[in-house]
Image (cartoon, rainbow, N blue to C red; front, side):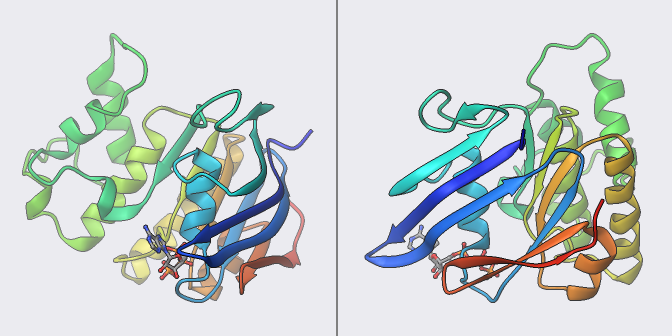
Length: 216
Ligand SMILES: Nc1ncnc2c1ncn2[C@@H]1O[C@H](COP(=O)(O)OP(=O)(O)OP(=O)(O)O)[C@@H](O)[C@H]1O
Protein backbone atom coordinates (compact mmCIF):
# COMPACT_ATOMS: atom_id res chain seq x y z
CA UNK A 1 0.00 0.00 0.00
CA UNK A 2 1.40 3.47 -0.86
CA UNK A 3 2.29 5.62 2.16
CA UNK A 4 0.98 8.75 0.37
CA UNK A 5 -1.65 8.76 -2.37
CA UNK A 6 -3.15 11.64 -4.33
CA UNK A 7 -6.21 11.03 -6.49
CA UNK A 8 -7.39 13.62 -9.01
CA UNK A 9 -6.23 16.56 -6.89
CA UNK A 10 -7.07 19.98 -8.26
CA UNK A 11 -6.21 23.33 -6.70
CA UNK A 12 -7.21 26.73 -8.03
CA UNK A 13 -5.97 30.00 -6.54
CA UNK A 14 -7.69 33.18 -7.71
CA UNK A 15 -9.29 31.21 -10.59
CA UNK A 16 -5.83 30.03 -11.72
CA UNK A 17 -5.36 26.28 -11.97
CA UNK A 18 -2.24 25.47 -9.90
CA UNK A 19 -2.66 21.69 -9.56
CA UNK A 20 -4.45 20.09 -12.50
CA UNK A 21 -5.99 16.71 -11.68
CA UNK A 22 -2.88 15.29 -10.03
CA UNK A 23 -2.74 11.60 -9.16
CA UNK A 24 0.40 10.26 -7.51
CA UNK A 25 1.53 7.35 -5.38
CA UNK A 26 4.47 7.47 -2.98
CA UNK A 27 5.85 4.17 -1.72
CA UNK A 28 7.43 3.95 1.68
CA UNK A 29 11.21 3.96 2.22
CA UNK A 30 11.89 5.69 -1.09
CA UNK A 31 13.23 9.18 -1.84
CA UNK A 32 11.12 11.28 -4.24
CA UNK A 33 12.36 14.50 -5.84
CA UNK A 34 10.07 17.05 -7.47
CA UNK A 35 11.36 19.58 -9.98
CA UNK A 36 9.58 22.30 -11.93
CA UNK A 37 9.85 25.96 -12.81
CA UNK A 38 9.19 28.81 -10.34
CA UNK A 39 5.50 29.04 -9.53
CA UNK A 40 4.67 25.59 -10.94
CA UNK A 41 2.97 24.43 -7.72
CA UNK A 42 5.65 22.37 -5.96
CA UNK A 43 5.19 24.08 -2.58
CA UNK A 44 1.38 24.04 -2.90
CA UNK A 45 1.54 20.30 -3.59
CA UNK A 46 3.63 19.65 -0.45
CA UNK A 47 1.34 21.86 1.65
CA UNK A 48 -1.74 20.05 0.32
CA UNK A 49 -0.23 16.71 1.39
CA UNK A 50 0.28 18.14 4.89
CA UNK A 51 -3.27 19.51 5.01
CA UNK A 52 -2.14 23.16 5.10
CA UNK A 53 -3.75 23.82 1.69
CA UNK A 54 -7.23 22.54 0.87
CA UNK A 55 -7.65 21.10 -2.63
CA UNK A 56 -10.77 22.04 -4.61
CA UNK A 57 -11.31 18.45 -5.71
CA UNK A 58 -9.71 15.06 -5.16
CA UNK A 59 -8.41 13.08 -2.22
CA UNK A 60 -5.07 12.91 -0.43
CA UNK A 61 -4.34 9.93 1.79
CA UNK A 62 -1.34 9.74 4.13
CA UNK A 63 -0.71 6.46 5.98
CA UNK A 64 -4.29 5.44 5.22
CA UNK A 65 -5.91 8.63 6.57
CA UNK A 66 -7.75 11.02 4.27
CA UNK A 67 -6.32 14.48 4.87
CA UNK A 68 -8.83 17.17 5.93
CA UNK A 69 -11.38 14.36 6.33
CA UNK A 70 -10.19 11.58 8.70
CA UNK A 71 -7.45 13.93 9.93
CA UNK A 72 -7.24 17.70 9.48
CA UNK A 73 -3.44 17.60 9.06
CA UNK A 74 -1.06 14.78 8.21
CA UNK A 75 0.52 13.47 11.40
CA UNK A 76 3.81 11.61 11.50
CA UNK A 77 5.26 13.91 8.87
CA UNK A 78 8.31 16.10 9.57
CA UNK A 79 8.52 19.11 7.28
CA UNK A 80 10.84 21.95 6.33
CA UNK A 81 9.87 25.06 4.39
CA UNK A 82 13.13 26.91 4.90
CA UNK A 83 13.31 30.12 6.85
CA UNK A 84 9.52 30.66 6.90
CA UNK A 85 9.06 28.05 9.62
CA UNK A 86 11.70 29.46 12.00
CA UNK A 87 11.30 31.82 14.96
CA UNK A 88 14.21 34.26 14.52
CA UNK A 89 14.06 35.69 18.07
CA UNK A 90 14.80 32.30 19.66
CA UNK A 91 17.87 30.08 19.56
CA UNK A 92 17.98 26.83 17.60
CA UNK A 93 17.34 24.69 20.69
CA UNK A 94 14.09 26.57 21.49
CA UNK A 95 12.97 26.40 17.86
CA UNK A 96 13.24 22.61 18.01
CA UNK A 97 11.86 22.30 21.53
CA UNK A 98 8.63 24.04 20.49
CA UNK A 99 8.16 21.47 17.73
CA UNK A 100 8.47 18.35 19.88
CA UNK A 101 5.22 16.41 19.65
CA UNK A 102 5.78 14.12 22.60
CA UNK A 103 6.96 14.81 26.10
CA UNK A 104 10.42 13.27 26.37
CA UNK A 105 12.64 12.90 29.40
CA UNK A 106 15.76 13.15 27.24
CA UNK A 107 14.52 16.25 25.40
CA UNK A 108 17.88 18.04 25.24
CA UNK A 109 19.53 14.88 23.86
CA UNK A 110 16.86 14.61 21.13
CA UNK A 111 17.43 18.27 20.21
CA UNK A 112 21.24 17.95 20.22
CA UNK A 113 21.00 14.86 18.01
CA UNK A 114 18.83 16.69 15.45
CA UNK A 115 21.25 19.66 15.41
CA UNK A 116 24.29 17.40 15.05
CA UNK A 117 22.63 15.49 12.20
CA UNK A 118 22.46 18.72 10.15
CA UNK A 119 25.96 19.82 11.14
CA UNK A 120 24.95 22.60 13.59
CA UNK A 121 26.64 23.13 16.94
CA UNK A 122 24.24 21.95 19.70
CA UNK A 123 25.95 24.42 22.10
CA UNK A 124 25.46 27.49 19.90
CA UNK A 125 22.84 29.57 21.75
CA UNK A 126 22.76 32.61 19.47
CA UNK A 127 19.36 33.78 18.24
CA UNK A 128 18.46 32.37 14.83
CA UNK A 129 18.37 35.92 13.40
CA UNK A 130 22.18 35.93 13.77
CA UNK A 131 22.50 32.74 11.65
CA UNK A 132 23.73 32.72 8.06
CA UNK A 133 21.31 31.59 5.32
CA UNK A 134 22.95 28.16 5.22
CA UNK A 135 22.66 27.74 9.00
CA UNK A 136 18.95 28.68 8.85
CA UNK A 137 18.43 26.10 6.11
CA UNK A 138 20.17 23.45 8.20
CA UNK A 139 18.03 24.35 11.21
CA UNK A 140 14.88 24.14 9.10
CA UNK A 141 15.93 20.62 8.04
CA UNK A 142 16.54 19.75 11.72
CA UNK A 143 12.93 20.84 12.37
CA UNK A 144 11.81 18.16 9.89
CA UNK A 145 13.94 15.51 11.64
CA UNK A 146 13.45 16.26 15.34
CA UNK A 147 10.36 14.11 15.88
CA UNK A 148 11.85 11.11 14.04
CA UNK A 149 8.75 10.92 11.81
CA UNK A 150 8.57 8.18 9.17
CA UNK A 151 7.78 10.72 6.41
CA UNK A 152 9.99 13.76 5.77
CA UNK A 153 8.99 16.64 3.48
CA UNK A 154 11.73 19.11 2.46
CA UNK A 155 10.86 22.12 0.32
CA UNK A 156 13.95 23.41 -1.51
CA UNK A 157 16.40 22.05 1.09
CA UNK A 158 19.44 23.14 -0.96
CA UNK A 159 18.50 26.84 -0.83
CA UNK A 160 21.29 28.77 0.85
CA UNK A 161 23.63 25.76 1.02
CA UNK A 162 27.08 25.93 -0.55
CA UNK A 163 28.57 22.99 -2.49
CA UNK A 164 29.86 21.33 0.70
CA UNK A 165 26.46 21.80 2.35
CA UNK A 166 24.73 20.24 -0.65
CA UNK A 167 26.99 17.17 -0.57
CA UNK A 168 26.35 16.92 3.17
CA UNK A 169 22.61 16.99 2.40
CA UNK A 170 22.92 14.20 -0.19
CA UNK A 171 24.62 12.05 2.50
CA UNK A 172 21.96 12.98 5.07
CA UNK A 173 19.17 11.94 2.69
CA UNK A 174 20.91 8.63 2.00
CA UNK A 175 21.15 8.15 5.77
CA UNK A 176 17.39 8.83 6.08
CA UNK A 177 16.78 6.17 3.43
CA UNK A 178 18.85 3.69 5.46
CA UNK A 179 16.68 4.59 8.47
CA UNK A 180 13.69 3.57 6.31
CA UNK A 181 12.23 7.05 6.06
CA UNK A 182 10.12 8.16 3.11
CA UNK A 183 11.37 11.51 1.81
CA UNK A 184 9.60 13.91 -0.52
CA UNK A 185 11.67 16.94 -1.57
CA UNK A 186 11.66 19.72 -4.13
CA UNK A 187 14.63 21.29 -5.86
CA UNK A 188 15.64 23.30 -8.90
CA UNK A 189 19.03 21.59 -8.87
CA UNK A 190 18.93 18.66 -11.33
CA UNK A 191 22.33 17.38 -10.15
CA UNK A 192 21.17 17.34 -6.53
CA UNK A 193 17.89 15.63 -7.47
CA UNK A 194 19.70 12.90 -9.40
CA UNK A 195 22.18 12.35 -6.58
CA UNK A 196 19.59 12.25 -3.81
CA UNK A 197 16.37 10.79 -5.22
CA UNK A 198 15.19 7.34 -6.30
CA UNK A 199 12.37 8.86 -8.35
CA UNK A 200 12.00 12.29 -9.91
CA UNK A 201 8.72 13.98 -10.78
CA UNK A 202 8.39 17.05 -12.94
CA UNK A 203 5.56 19.56 -12.46
CA UNK A 204 4.64 21.74 -15.38
CA UNK A 205 1.46 23.70 -16.06
CA UNK A 206 -0.14 22.04 -13.05
CA UNK A 207 0.45 18.54 -14.36
CA UNK A 208 2.88 16.04 -12.93
CA UNK A 209 4.86 13.42 -14.77
CA UNK A 210 7.51 10.96 -13.73
CA UNK A 211 10.86 11.88 -15.22
CA UNK A 212 13.08 9.08 -14.06
CA UNK A 213 12.63 6.04 -11.89
CA UNK A 214 16.02 4.76 -10.88
CA UNK A 215 14.52 2.27 -8.44
CA UNK A 216 15.22 2.38 -4.76
N1 LIG B 1 -1.30 32.41 -0.94
C1 LIG B 1 -1.29 32.53 -2.26
N2 LIG B 1 -2.08 33.44 -2.87
C2 LIG B 1 -2.09 33.57 -4.21
N3 LIG B 1 -1.34 32.83 -5.05
C3 LIG B 1 -0.54 31.91 -4.49
C4 LIG B 1 -0.47 31.70 -3.07
N4 LIG B 1 0.40 30.71 -2.83
C5 LIG B 1 0.86 30.32 -4.03
N5 LIG B 1 0.30 31.03 -5.01
C6 LIG B 1 0.57 30.89 -6.46
O1 LIG B 1 0.53 29.51 -6.77
C7 LIG B 1 1.52 29.20 -7.74
C8 LIG B 1 2.35 28.01 -7.24
O2 LIG B 1 3.13 28.46 -6.13
P1 LIG B 1 4.22 27.51 -5.44
O3 LIG B 1 4.76 28.30 -4.30
O4 LIG B 1 3.63 26.19 -5.17
O5 LIG B 1 5.29 27.39 -6.59
P2 LIG B 1 6.69 26.61 -6.56
O6 LIG B 1 6.66 25.62 -7.71
O7 LIG B 1 6.95 26.10 -5.22
O8 LIG B 1 7.65 27.82 -6.94
P3 LIG B 1 9.21 28.13 -6.55
O9 LIG B 1 10.03 27.21 -7.40
O10 LIG B 1 9.37 29.56 -6.95
O11 LIG B 1 9.36 27.91 -5.08
C9 LIG B 1 2.32 30.46 -7.99
O12 LIG B 1 1.87 31.05 -9.18
C10 LIG B 1 1.98 31.33 -6.81
O13 LIG B 1 1.99 32.69 -7.19
